[in-house]
Length: 169
Image (cartoon, rainbow, N blue to C red; front, side):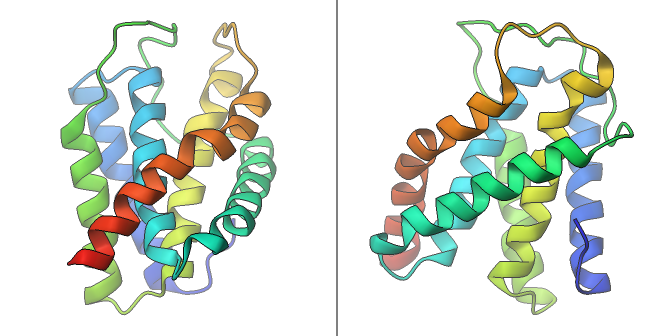
């Protein structure tokens, strides 16, 4: 994804560094990272809507961008994950989710980034994560493109959660 400003590119770089540190230092699994990315993307989308009527259009745009961007990744953007297996009893890393949400929120305010700019940064980071099994030649028993399509059903509850919290505050 091409970023429109240096600040937008800097946000993406910071997000990528935070995630890379968790992959290396905390040995976070691929499945945990996917779960965190869904939560963080839900936060981002919740910030972007004024009404819930906007959700289907925004989801379609986001799903399309994720498909396109993850396919365009040809170099490893992140360190390799130690664990790509689907595990039924994993718990997402709340610390990573909080760190990414805080970084997105604070960067938007401090650097006067629009929600579209922060959306581009988080979509690019999520696309990096989605591309990693392919770039690592990791065996996956599921289809990444179908997973992206399924975000239309996974994201609304996260969007609603954040939309409620953001409009009440």
